[in-house]
Length: 317
Image (cartoon, rainbow, N blue to C red):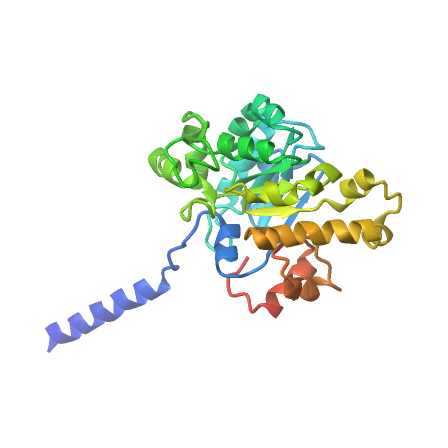
């Protein structure tokens, strides 16, 4: 009797212990995990350059946002600051969703004017990735040659998805894995396997984006998004307006017929090539934009909560 009772208590204890453990996460990159679930992604960030410190990383580890847009396009190119920030994120985690850190996507100051420009500046992608970030955004992505060079610079040569007619093998070197892997909380070998472009590599954890933000990128939108390895794209309305000669600002600029046509063309190219479209969300339009098919965008916490409620989001932030 005592043996049976003891066994029952032990079994109940083990069951309760298992039930109390958090579910195993499917992804390192929370933004990718959400997109795979069909859930829109809301991000935060700034152009101030104040992110680059260990203390700020500790604070931002508990952000409400699904990913953090880290700007080095308009703010200083400061790799040391970015590395400290990433270490702070890891120290301040995990997030409420159980991920080691929020995802971080960096705007790198490399304009995709042409293939030669991207290849000459690919060292910046290497340095940024070595800090353990989860994605990179190529600005002014004007030509398919520039986009191909971007994707190849991001990838390790061991990954072969898309290599052949569309892409050459990856050109990223191995040494950054030693510093990036601890931020992700995995071994160097695991990092080599996982640090690849999603969804081209279904197991990849890097989210690559394009800013199609001028008339040159606009004219090549379809060809640019045909290049494998790109996860999302935006139309950059502020720079697009300048490029198209639209002198209005804010809502007036966005409503200009030239701008309406530009957005429609880029959105259509995204749909055609299964690339997620990025557009700013606000409380008044977030539901309409989700219905339209927008899946990524900058937002306030209040806006994100409206969107999450509308899509019955289950994952906590």
